[in-house]
Image 1 (cartoon, helix red, strand yellow):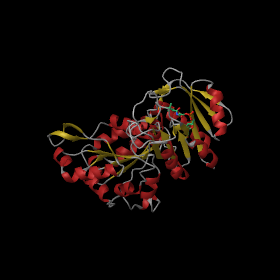
Image 2: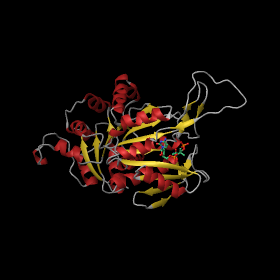
Image 3: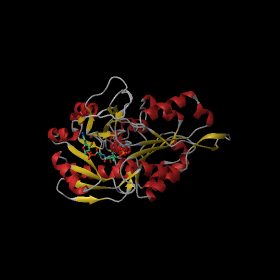
Length: 401
Ligand code: PMT
């Protein structure tokens, strides 16, 4: 799991430093290369010789040592790892990092690490009163907002004889957290890309009370938006009315009608590298939207007129953007989907057979065929919309190279 991964293990001066030796051993057992950087206070709790023997690598602790051979060892060390873990992280160290103080090698390395490329996990360890001190609470809150990750301390007997919160998490738990974070960042294949997703139904007004709409819940589009954000994309989600919360971190633009969705999509589409149109856009709208509630009669005739076809318009203007459409069908699935793909100039179409059990509107699952521009068809099994979203994004990423 951790083969080919380099982990920088920072050790600061707390009694839990003895656990760092076990952490290094477990990481190495998983195949990782472990580079240790210690503060001078950490060396009072555990010797550099112990860490050097366990890791098979030199241990760094001073900013200025002629034996390093590089004058910019802090930058070299910050560039190398796939992940940094500081265990234990003392109250003093958290205070320094939150204030941007770089007065020794470890704090300078942390300042030089680019968080968007390399996750940093801090494992606090201290007395309960110190952990609950407002200064420490504020520092932790600030660091979390900046994107640092925390392995929250456990409750238990502390070295000072007290019982309470502040005990550093066990090395095995830290290893699990490290694996989880590295698995996530391995999927950050959309960082630097913008993905626009449309979702949900549109509502076409008949009068102030009534509208024409369809059965889309928005689940498919929201799952795509969430998955794209999880893979590091900037996400623009344009959605018709749904009961769903927009996923965290996406730019959200709610709309109501097809014409509003058209305007929002056209306004933003030049920002996007990939556009995925999962929305069920109403093809027709009432020709007239009455200003007052229509009074009851024996019958009511409503003339419907065509809405703009947003996807077709995108297809004619797309340039080198990657355009994914959906086709919701109840018959001749592949034939109808292929026609839509050609007419709308798509790079990929997700053909959605609404007659299949567990597929289509308002379900947690979906069953689709992917049809690629070169004619290749991939039939997928029934799967969660969240899983399908990642699979679609994987195929798109492979196609755009
Ligand atoms: O929202 P859920 O409840 O999770 O349901 C998911 C879904 C069934 C809505 C979704 O998986 C799906 O199939 N979406 C497309 C529905 C649809 O409108 O299909 P269509 O075959 O009518 O349209 C083809 C494509 O053209 C779609 O990408 C659609 O967004 C787009 N279109 C259609 C009409 C129009 N006026 N403008 C468009 O852009």
